[in-house]
Length: 104
Image (tube, rainbow, N blue to C red; front, side, top):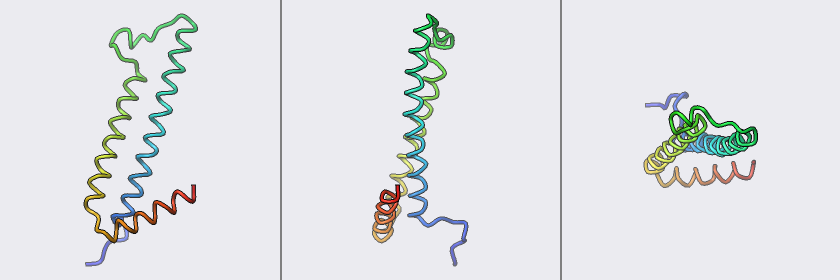
């Protein structure tokens, strides 16, 4: 049976999942930096985070934790995908990842 054009090959799925994971990792770094800046700004004006004072966690803390869980989920998916690849697909994936690194 022919593979549908809408179905990604395993190595393509792996590359796309890796790219999404990398975007989530960059978002996480941005959130951590934004939280630090927000805490500095609140301190500079003598204010406190009202949500954090009530719940013990700021909205930034919640966003950071949620994004950490997302990155961990991507990591688990990548491990599962890698385990499903054949040796030939793994070799092709290595070539694709090297090409992507050279292009960026």
